Image (tube, rainbow, N blue to C red; front, top):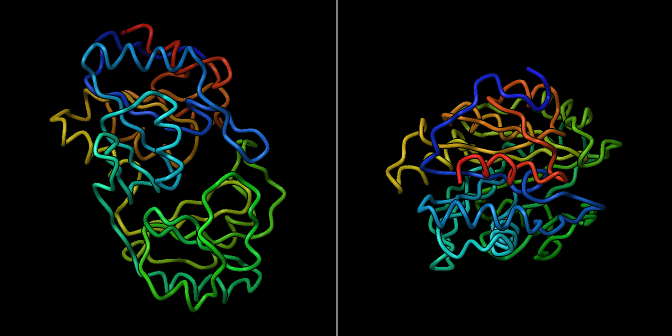
Length: 282
């Protein structure tokens, strides 16, 4: 298919719309996400006015997911965060689901491969706790500096291992240094789910947990099937929900393999691609 032409346009409106955040409903510049455009906010409002729920499904930590969900005007429904390990009820303003994992083996294997690796860990709504050398080069809620021993004391829904990288966020490719570290650490998929991202990041969470599992949980709450769900995303960590959903829309600036996995390729995030697709149905 061409970059912006669907192979088979979905004509029937979905019964559930799920959106990734960074690179999908908001752009990302210099380590900080922009606010969603009026066109995207209006399109999301039209979906909800039609009685169709909108879910946020993101790799962000819960507090970051809620910030942009609020910007989108989502005052009810759910935000799935941390690649499906966390879920936040936007109406009740509380965590509605949480899965955690013991990170000891993962940390030990990463350090054995590369002793320069730094770590951050997400503990509910407290913010990122991180080792001393972890780069705080992005907008976030920060919990404080901890040692590796401190990090191992509590299970978490998400561990981040980070190495030096020349591949910035938004480059469209996963960091080669992080890819090598992940491959060398060889974590057992029976124990951990791992996502390699940009800028030297490796996300580690509970086994069997992904954006797809987080979205499936929300769809079950609404009684909506995967076939009646439309998802929007731009990155490799969106591929699990692309496979799960009945109709997947990739953003125009996404990497070629992400676009190839989608049923449709929307205009880029800075061209309000989400809004332009949703306007066909709502």
